[in-house]
Amino acid sequence: MKALVFAAGRGERMRPLTDTLPKPLLKVGAHRLIEWHLHKLAALGVTDVVVNLAWLADRFPELLGDGSRYGLHLHYSREGDVALETGGGMLHALPLLGDAPFIVVNGDVWTDYDLARLPSEPRGLAHLVMVDPAAHVPAGDFRLADDGRLHERDAPPAQSWPALTYSGIGVYRPALLDGWRGVIGHAPGARDEPPRFPLAPLLRAAMRDGRVTGEHHHGAWTDVGTPGRLAALDRQLRDR
Image: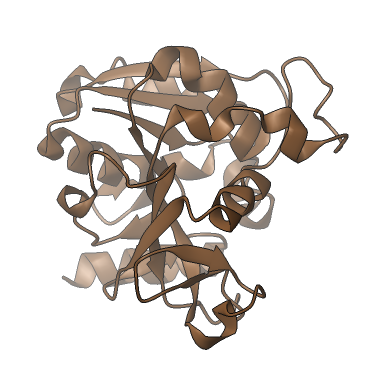
């Protein structure tokens, strides 16, 4: 099984730290953010990891190399000066990922979630790990039904199920991107080459067809989006 780590973002809220170093390469505890994921993926038996790059792209191969120190083969999907967003980034990386389901991890989150719990074959087009909404994003993203399917937050009868936040971890089938233009339409960036578009509209469309499942992780999870949250997580990990 292969994996995709999203690492192309600019990290505006993390400035000035990200003026010289991409956010996934910042250190928390003993490792860089992305290294926590690489160690977990290697322990799971993943051998090939694709990392999408845009901002300060050359820093990744400079600091991570070819992945051999982690027991992995790292493949870099370079997107140019401007990141292609999550949907465009995944589409651009597909030639490196192949036709089988693959793991996706956001490079700027930290969690104690056990990747071994992920299904190798999702029931539908995607399986997402959900967490309790964070204080800075209290509304949540999607709702998790009793049968394990995910629904749009405001779609009836979804209001009767808990609204949870997408953790940035999941398993995806490449087929989720089939017909993406029909879903994205004429959104800005969709006509660019390579195209730039978000993944969320494709997930919501698949949810309406009942083709996205999820699970609720009750353990530790941090969206490392600000210097304050980075410092707090660093203290927490060093105190362990």
